Length: 398
Image (tube, rainbow, N blue to C red):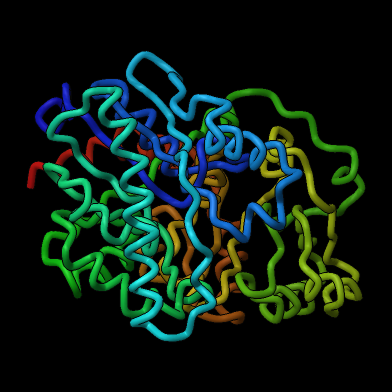
C-alpha cells in the first residue's frame, strides 16, 4: 500500500450521491479514505428545476435553495482535510428531451453552470493540480474535464447504468465517450472493468470496500424472536426483495423441492413479491424489513445464506456487497454465477440454475466447518476501504 499511496494532493469528487444521503455510499467512503492523506472537496450535484418545483418542502432541498439564494454558505468543512460543497447554481431538467443534439446543447450549458460554481470552491480552497474523481455522473459532469482542467480525470463505474431507462436514453451515447476521454477508468467489478476497457485501455478493476464492523460473528448474537419458531435448517436471504433483481421462480423451486428446509427472507418487498405465489408456500417465511443494526442477528441464525440473483442488464455487473457481509460472519453462501462473482468462487458455492441451487445448498450444509468459516471471514476482512483505495492509487500510478 505504501508504494501505491498518493498523498499531499488535492482531489475533487463528483457523483450521483449527495453528502447528506441517508443510504450507504461508495463515493463518500472513498472520499473519506482519500482525505486521510489528501485534501478532498466532495461536490454535491446541483439542484435541477424539476426537483425545486416538486420537492421544495424537503429540508435538504431548502438547504440547497438557501445556498443558491446566498443565505447560507455552500462550502462546509467536514474534517481536517475534507470539505463538502453545495453548488450555488441550478441547472435545467433536460433528460426528457429526445433529440441527442438538443440534449447535448443544453447539457453543455448545465455543465458550464456546474463547473462555474465548483470553480468558486476551488478558488476559496486554493486547490491546485487536482485530481477529478467522477462517480458515474454521466450527464452533469460530462464536460468537467474540459471545463475544470484537472491534472488527472477519473471515471468510476460501480453499476451498469445503461440498463436503467433514465440513463439509457442519452447515456448509451455519452457514457462510452466519457469513459474514452477520461485519463483513468476504475470499476468495482470485473464485469464493469471489462465494459470500460472496450472504450479506454487504461481501465482497472479496483475491487470494493465494505464496512464489516457490524458483521463480526465473534460477538454474541441472540436469535431474534420471529425466527425462533422456524424449523431448521434455515436458508436465508437479507436485503431488498425486488423482482427485477431476485429470481422468484428459483426460490419457489428450492422450497418445493426441499420442504424440510425453511427459506427465510428478511427485507422489504416490492409489489411483485407481495403479489407473488411465494407467500403461499408453507416453508417460505417473510420476516419483513429490519433495522440495519439487527441484520447480523438474522444472518447469524441462518445455516446457509443465499443471493438468488436474476441475470439481467441491471444486475450482471454489480459487486454484491451482501456476499462480504455473509462471509464476514463465516456463513456458507450459495449465489448465482456471474462475472462479478468470480472473485468469490473459492469461498462460495456458485450455481447457474435452480436445480444447481438445491444441490449446492445441500453441499454447503454438509461441508460447513470451523476451518471453512475462518477462511470466509479472512477473505471478507480483506475488503476494506483502505485496501480499495490502495488499488485506486495503484491504477492512478499505472
